Image (cartoon, rainbow, N blue to C red):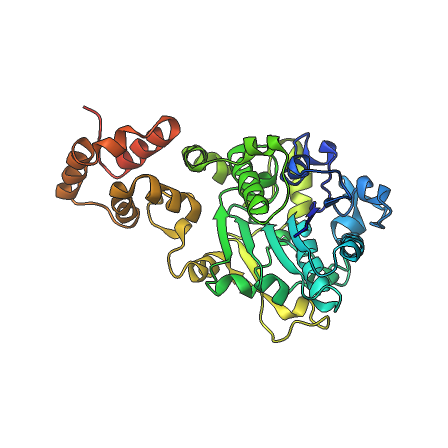
Length: 414
């Protein structure tokens, strides 16, 4: 069964690294890992507001504004053009393989919204409604800039996921450290249903940082790339041999998660809570914040019935990110624990598989301060029956584990 893959950059991002502070973006790296040439088994959509998108013949507005274009950056002009381009390409491929195609979609920011719109368009078209669609969405942000002056309301139309995605596989990955009002993510109701083929996770990092492989949050971006490539490979997207280099195994991911948690202070300082930052970023950050940030991230969710084209920005309301994640996690949101050890759900699952004897104790320590007797018991077990697992920890994993235990008053040295 042929598998077609569509990649979509976010606003003001493209394959040109000048649009991303010189850093390679996750979406661009995925394109480099896919087998075949652009236009054969896969295509890549450049981001709204970029010269690269305009060069593809997609209208995206030409008013200069903070490194992009006002219509492209604030309003997302170009997203609908990318949707049409993608659907037309899929229809042409379908002519050669009628009824026998799977479509994989990956995007970041408005690129993820582009994926949702492509999926919706395929679902509503009788020629493509039966195609199986799989989506890996990285921090899907329609843009919370209003719908009158910026004309951004179009980005909330036709984004509700339909039966073609519900029958497929999907993954939603949300940036934990983003607080700017304009970057509220859209969370589809699909991810609150507990369906085994439709999963979500969070990761420390800002909206743009988790997409920049050489940026300030490289550990998070490496994990995002790995999980996206793993998702595509599992769902039939042909990969070059070199792609394996970027798909991290369990121990490698545990190492990256430990590195993130050892640097969690840096990640929190990068969080966009204060719209006024020093240095060259101050003007751009202030503008993108529109003078407003939120103490805790807020997500936009649907609050009215229906899924047709008549729905718009008014059918989506803000919901506290912590409350939403706690609900989606069935009351077990990782980032809300009093003394957090785990970076996210993936970190927790990997640690449980690698260190089953220690896992439950760590989960308990996340929630409550241990008594003196309990501290002594844990210390003795790590030197005794748990020692084999403990000594197998290496590098950042061991450093991070020891620092967590020390934080809980369990001194392991001596």
